[in-house]
Image (cartoon, rainbow, N blue to C red; front, side, top):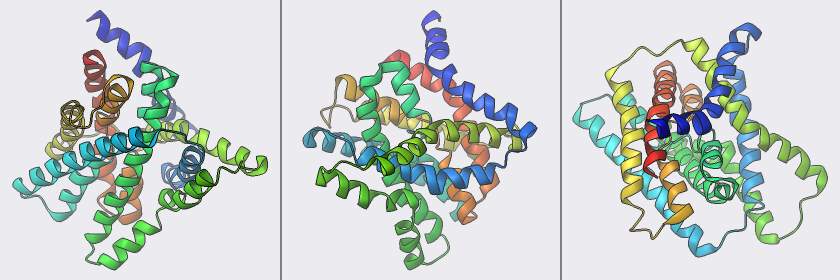
Length: 301
């Protein structure tokens, strides 16, 4: 029990403190959650992706195993969620939500700070690789699923290609492969914007919690959250050996596999009108529930 409380206070409390700050100051300062979310979605996220990918230096074989691992974990979790939703005879929209919650973990907002606090600064390198791999996969699946639900595959493909985070990939990789230094007048504002993503998204989560109120428990909300949290953690542990991951990379991989639903799902739901109130409530509930599930995962590691 003492170890559980140590994990909670030393690793999780610093992250939840920023969520609480957003919850407290949001209503008093009249913060608008949609405006903050759009700012993060269209400005901060692509800056973060560019900042990470344009400078990352990781051994190719190791990076390939890590990307394959995290993609397999989240795709498998999404398959479980899809099958569960169909067995429960849920609507197309609700099935889409199950899949979105399952495949888009909070590997940035929660993942990177928790990885750093729990495993040290050296863990940020594998943590960032997992983050980039998941955010690319999740954006493609979530945006495509949201738009395929409207019956237009061409529109879905166009929406995926216009996703801000994905638009940042091409220039970031091109700059990385060129080995050219980024001019200071570009590097400094991009770095400042990238640094703002994690605290901004944690504040946004708190503002959303304050505006939406404490989520009213619903079977689909609880079940989708458990698939993301418990299913993701179990698959994370199970797939370590097949991908040959151990040590720091393995520990970080399991942590990133166990993250709650990402706040960005709420933004995608808002942008595509996919039951945004319910999605926001589910995201908030899964993040609150993760205080328990992540503490257990950290102890098991």
